[in-house]
Image (cartoon, rainbow, N blue to C red; front, side, top):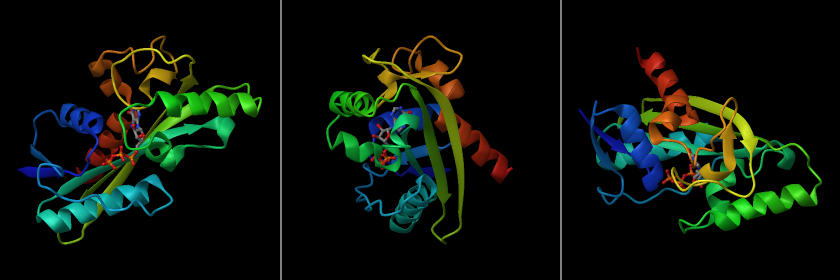
Length: 191
Ligand code: ITT
């Protein structure tokens, strides 16, 4: 079956392909030349649904979208749904990670607690859709460690582990990530 992966983020597209394990013939939104809708919703699930629906309508195929981000307890949940916007258009997350470190220091926040959220939405061209969310908790570490993964991975150390997502083997991240947890819930909802 053909499935559109409605993301323009290569790190996400790679992890989603790993998590889907060859079950579908994947085509990315970029390959289809689909434009990115503006993420106008205030929640991960809202933005995931918006992106999945737009891709399904435009392609005539079922589409899977991912909206995700890092929420820092000491920053009242920021950057959260604004995680991509804090980083800007480039691939360099060093400034966004430094901003988190700086704002935590400015607030005198002493807890490094944070969590990643992933909302996955699957939409069909007839406007049916399902959405599921996954979360993983951990601590932030500064300076950033590791160059695997993507985005904020080098500053996130999941609970119960010594390595950051940036240092971990991709398969280890995929076994526990917010993305993998959202996917298992999505599967359960469809079973
Ligand atoms: P699409 O909307 O095209 O899918 P995007 O990068 O704009 O791509 P989001 O709006 O969902 O996606 O932003 C998610 C942000 O959170 C983005 O900056 C990611 O780098 C970051 N993020 C999400 N999942 C992550 C993960 O597993 N590891 C590290 N950073 C992650």
